[in-house]
Amino acid sequence: MASVDYEIAPRRGLLEAVYHSIADLGAAVLNTFETLGDMTLFAWRTLVWMCTRLPRRETLYSSMYQIGVLSLPVVALTGTFIGMVLAVQSYTQFRAFGLETQLGGVINKSMFRELGPVLAATMLAGRVGSAMAAELGTMRVTEQIDALSSMGANPIQHLVVPRFLSCLLLIPSLTIMAVFMGVVGGTGYCIFVLDIDIQHYTSNANDFVENWDLFYGIVKSVFFGATIGLVSCYRGFHCKPGAEGVGSAATTAFVQSFVVIIVLDLFLSIFLDTIYLAIWPEGPSLF
Amino acid sequence: MVASNSIIDVCNLHIRFGQQEVLRDISIQVPRGQTLAIIGESGCGKTVLLKTIIGLIRPSQGHVDFDNRRVDRLSEKDLAHQRTRFGFVFQNSALFDSMTVAENILFPLRQHRAEQQAEHDQQMHAGLAEVGLPPSVLGKRPAELSGGMRKRVGLARALVMHPEVLLYDEPTTGLDPIVSDVINELMIRTSENYEVTSVIVTHDMKSARKVADRVVMLYPLSRLEPGEPQIIFDGSPAEIDAATDSRVSQFVRGEAGDRLMEMRESRAVGHA
Image (cartoon, rainbow over the protein chains, first blue to last red):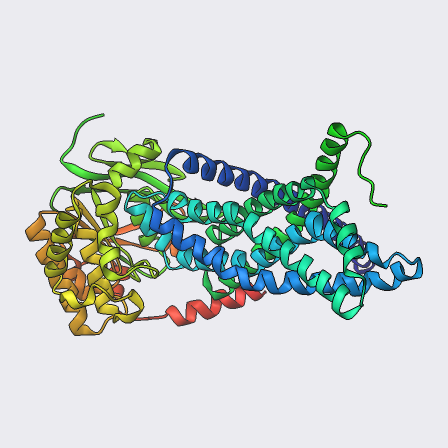
């Protein structure tokens, strides 16, 4: 009997491990679909409330101040340095081809189309998204959200809609600020530190950047703002109990927002380039 | 549906969160004007029952009727309207941190009543006077108040809408004996002055004896045999002292008995 036990035990262990792995994988897949469905419903309810009853003016203004105005300095600062870093990184390669006067085109195009919107969104997700998730998470844990519901008020209308609207409406301004400061930083570095001729630099920079590039960045930013608002509020609303739950909600809000922003960035870039080529089939020409 | 004198009618209620069963086959009727205390050990589902009554938690099975209407079948709009007939005093008061005391008390009025600001202010001051707080607290934030003051602000917020039913979740927990008694007195005075029906969830026997007309005791499902009813006592506060069920008398006297040994044994079984 002892030898039989010896033979069977490892097999059962292996089978069990495989069984548990499949079960865990299945649970993870189901959980992901459940979360996605729940998030979609959450987004739908937010949109319905946004269209049916706007938040009170003072709630919206307070939210806009927190989300937009207080984010301006950090967005402006990081935008400036990103513009300068772009100049530093690109200068050596461009100089090797004798194209350093074209640097402005590359820096500005990158800032308008890519770095401006993504940078503003990242700063917003880090500064505001995490704070929103932590604030709403604390409200969930301390039963303040239940208190709202028990008074016949809708928590989504009172807590989510003002934050979502603020993110949606103010991220274009933050993006414009990031782009502007990036362009100023890049231009300043090229002209004053790298000693590139100002006339050639600005002329090339102006030639390469079109109105479409500004539109391109702003369209992206609106989607990023909506993502930050929804993901952060959702994470706050579904916060687990305790200090650990609140901390986890804040971290998850930032990580998920950032991942979605990067994925969205790719698809929006493809989509917007397709539209551009449909309208102007010759396509853009950088050089 | 047959109309009854009960304003709250809990019928064969079952609540499950995933695999965990919290409430099993609970049936309680609360007549108009009665003050019912629900007592029981921590984790036996008292707060869950309270939140189910107001529709914050959906029943897994069974239903709760409020004024002869099933709470779980109400539309979102009707449920929101129905909740204005309730006042809920939360365990930790659940005052909105970002608002002042005045804004907290005014919140339900601004949400549901279209009167002038002057009338709202009048009602707010009346609510504040009812719970014995000075007007100087109105400009303060909840974080600046003591636990007892927060409870009283929570009660004032619940009272401004002149509810028909008041639900209290552990109203005296975490308070010193004198402030606890102040809250007890407030609950009695509120029931008399406003003629409200009250449901109080507590494990403070002194509070239950003083305030309640009737006491219901719930027992944790994890400690019950299959098929045993979860309500192990339903009677007047005077009757509870004479209860023959050892579990009831043990709770009333606040004696641990062999509970610590049982906890150690169940921990050992869990590890094995």
